[in-house]
Image 1 (cartoon, rainbow, N blue to C red):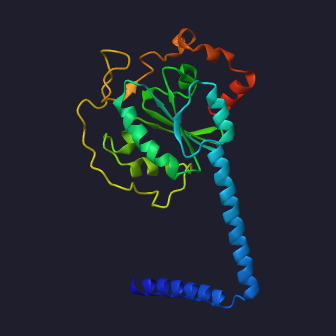
Image 2 (image 1 turned 180 degrees about the horizontal axis):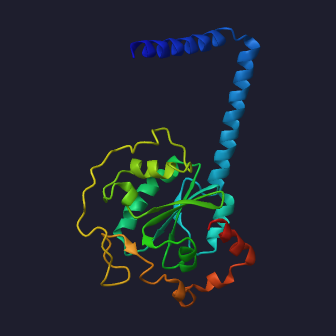
Image 3 (image 1 turned 90 degrees about the vertical axis):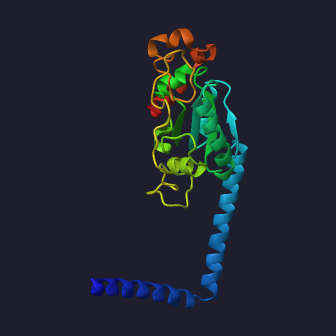
Length: 244
């Protein structure tokens, strides 16, 4: 075992020495080329940042209607959408964290949509629990964060935990260890967690709300769909097929 460790250590030392030697042997032209390459990278990043800001990256705002969805997926490669309802306090918790993450991660667009006002999208994206965070990359639905199950099963999860969870799919840049949550929490069953809401469609907000059972069933879509939903173009419907 000691011999193996010694061999590994020696191999690492050789790699480090070779890298140092390579740097030492760089001439003026090499250094100038490296400087130019780095400058180009920074210029491209600045241009990308300006583009992101023009497309409302860095903000966390609500989309007023379903048709806005088709506009934002065309402008942003990385899209994080929080489907919420006004009656859920858990949605307010998500809002708090996403407001912090939006200006930190300009590479992604953070936004929210009211599930009750967007039944067509909620049904098409299979949003059945409130809150749900939908993660879309280059018009493809890559993942969903459903309730708080992946966030420690507790309401007081940290912003860093949500950041880590979103980063699992590469939608945002993450400097930490993707294999380990930033704060290992002890999962404690919270009072009433996991129960379904029985007394009204969107009532008790200390639980995740099952919206499939209350008001977003597919057989009720026609009667509940807002007027603008009936105006979706064939092209927009085709785009939805991309995120199936």
